[in-house]
Length: 291
Image (cartoon, rainbow, N blue to C red; front, top):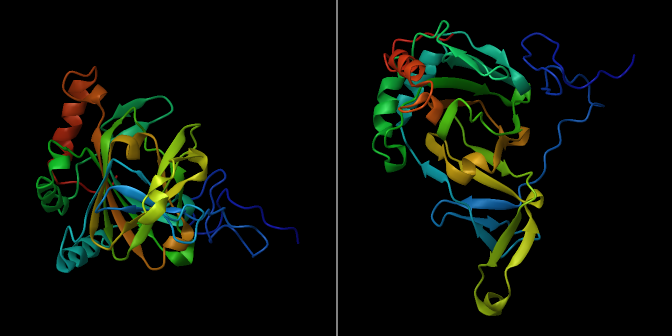
């Protein structure tokens, strides 16, 4: 018969729409999987630099990559185990690109920019402890999560997520995610016309080289996320760089919890402050069931 079209869903348990696809809907081999560029830089948490990978044309070059905060072993193995066990007692709903999800948050229409509590009953009780532990991070001072999304990635479904920005009308500056069950790589890419200035980082004569200018489009930065690590994206890493995860970086089951805060519009002094307050009150009751 004819070749099956890629994407657009189909097949039991698939949650793809539009051009998205996963192994459940891609059909036999002839259909090309979504393109996956190689990341050519790797983020270094110790220095805050994106450093050119050894086998890329950018080896020996680096540039500052602000707005990333990573805490290894944010929770213990026992806590991790307990959290995932509790999640697995609830249903996982099919989501885009071979993922499954559980949502705890208000009902949102991003296209119409409408928001209401809907059937939101708060974040789950197991998150109270996680949110309390976040208070120890200076970068998360005053962080009030209004929404939680649990995501389940599995290699056998070809789970991935296309490069995207999180919405900025509703969600505030800091995006927080807790990476569970296996390590992965968050790939940061940038479509803008901006030029990135690289600096030589090797010892010796190269240090006299002039900085190198490269188009942002040619650069992608891998952020390595260890199992049980907490990642915060803010500033440029939130607003200038898209984030995504390649299929090849999901080697085992991976569960991720993402937390989002409200934008200024829904916070103190914003025009929808009252609605924001109401949603936070629900969220922070920690009595929620998935919506």
